[in-house]
Image 1 (cartoon, one colour):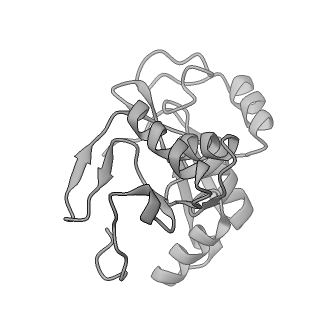
Image 2 (image 1 turned 180 degrees about the horizontal axis):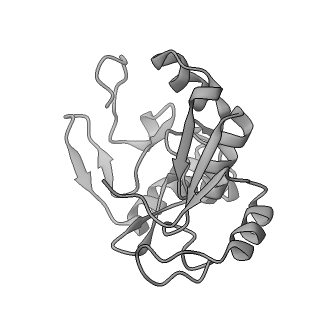
Length: 181
């Protein structure tokens, strides 16, 4: 992922100029390989970085993702913890409208010809709202439990979806129970 960026990956916190976070399951090594790491060990490293006032750049600010119907911690959650430790964080990704605008520019379409699909009201749908594009909220994803959904493809109660959308101040154009291909 860092190829061509003229960055040097370091092992030692003392040598780091910034921390780049785009996942929560491994550390990048100077060799270019990765080393699996537990979330607890990763948090210990981040505590060291915060104590040294090393800024963090987060390339994927989602808080959680769904794997096998379980919610898995994502970089946005680490960023929130890092800020609580006193660390400086720069987020790069949804819900910032620049991601949507850049994607539309890359393929040469404008907002009227675009739709964002996602299961996160806070990131996917709020970002689409801010970018001025239509959105489809997938209710069977990270908000399934909040919506009382217990099985794949189950349709959420519309009043529950509306209440949750208001809670996150993120309003989808369309609502779908699931997305598969």
